[in-house]
Length: 101
Image 1 (tube, rainbow, N blue to C red):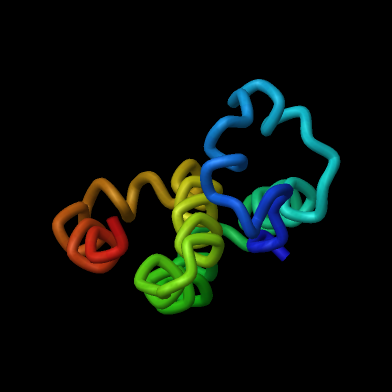
Image 2 (cartoon, one colour):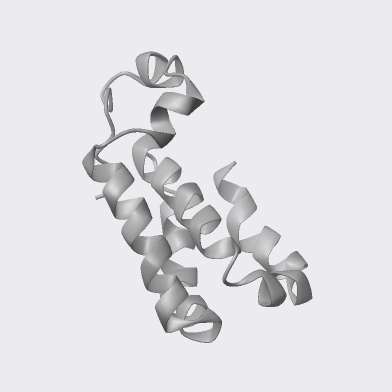
């Protein structure tokens, strides 16, 4: 759901949207991101890492920019809950996710 962005077929149009407008958006992708954030808050750090790491890693390496965007947004959404594990394993986290940059 996080790949269903406004202007998803036009990267330049999506890029031109003001950041404040993105956070106020009422689209499918925004609802999915908010839901992910709530879910990881409930299941906790260890379960989130076990369930999300491989999926996010695959997403950030995808050929479609919408999927890479969703992967990096997902990484950001779980970062607060997974902060201690990310800090302890920062080299591994960067190694898994930096290929998508």
